[in-house]
Each structure stands twice: as structure tokens, then as C-alpha cells.
Length: 231
Image 1 (cartoon, helix red, strand yellow):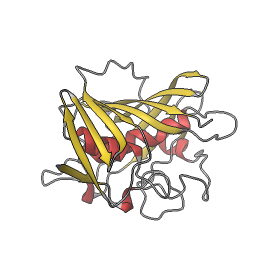
Image 2 (cartoon, helix red, strand yellow; image 1 turned 180 degrees about the vertical axis):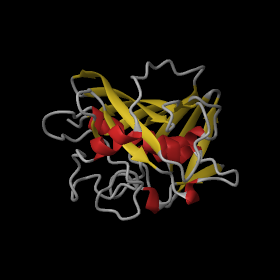
Image 3 (spheres, one colour; image 1 turned 135 degrees about the vertical axis):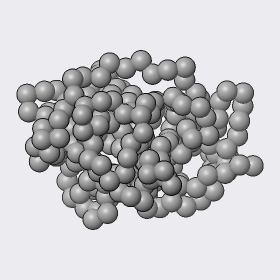
Image 4 (tube, one colour; image 1 turned 30 degrees about the vertical axis):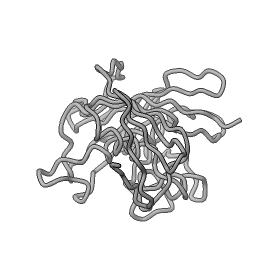
């Protein structure tokens, strides 16, 4: 059986994989764009089996279903007007995460972690969206200098949580579905802008969009994320 492993360094919550990173690893086994549904917390440092069932790809930890994925014909997502680097830097100063919360050690957005990506998405002044600058480290890239897809998926994940909590308390919600499309190469070592915005909130279900923008405001990658608040 084909397997994947999510290394412990790529956690989201302290004891499970970053949902976006795990989704990107799974999506790499499909044609993009793709949709990944997370069915249970993603185990770290253990082989996870990949089982193909027609167009569906299942990820298993023993008999436990971890994720299901499928390719998409496209991702039709309206992206807001771009945010420039100066605005993104200013927004990141309004980042709301605590240094001891559930996601404080996340490798993308964890403020308690020195080696995080530093994607600290705060609200853009006067707009209903969040933004952060992001300079992908060199080690995220392949031999051609382009950032590997799983790191783009991870970066598209975290800001959606904060986009869905522009006001009020930061209540717990977890990624359960991510769809993403990488539209242009993202170069390591170059400063980009990550944005995220709310789409809808219905009961415990929260839907948001996100994008990685080039310094010129071009769309390099887009994603849609469904988060669920626990009962």
C-alpha cells in the first residue's frame, strides 16, 4: 500500500498535523485543483495508507479514516481586491493569536514558535479581511526554487480562521475541508501577501476564502476552507 507521513514539525494543533499541510500532501497524489475532506485529526510521524476508490483517494490510519480527497474541475472563487505589502505588514501587527492557545505552536502561524512561517494575519484597516506578509524559506522549495505545494496549502489554511473571527472572541473551530488551486509559481525568498476573507457563517459551519498574492498583487494561489466549531 502506498503511504504518506506527516512529520511532527508540521503540526497545527500541538498533537496533530496542520490541516492545510496534510491536505496539500494528499492533493499531490491527485491532479489539481483538489478538494480534501479531513475526517479525523491527522496523526504525526506515522505511516498513513492511501487507498484509491475510483476518483476518490482515502487516507487511513489503520482502520481510521483520516481524510478523503478528489480532484476538482476548477475552483470558482471571487477574490477581493489585492492588499499591498505595506498594508499586510500593518495588518499583521493586529494579529490576535495568543502565545499559549491551541494553535500557538503551529508551524505556519504559531507565535510561540521561533521557526514558524510568521503568517500572522490581522485585519486590514477598513476592510473585512485579514492579511500578512509571507516570505517562504528556502527549504520549502524544490530544486527549481518554487515552493512545494504542501507549504502553499498550509499557508492558505491558517489565515481563514482569523478571517472568520474579525470581531469577538476567538472561539475554537477546526478545518474540515480545503479546496485549493495553485495558479502560478511561488518563489522561495520572495515576500508575498497572504489574505483571507469570510464567505458565510451558518450555525457551527464557517466558510472562508484565502489567496497568496505576488508583490504585484497577482493571484498565485487560492483556496476555500470550511471550518466547524465543535459542539
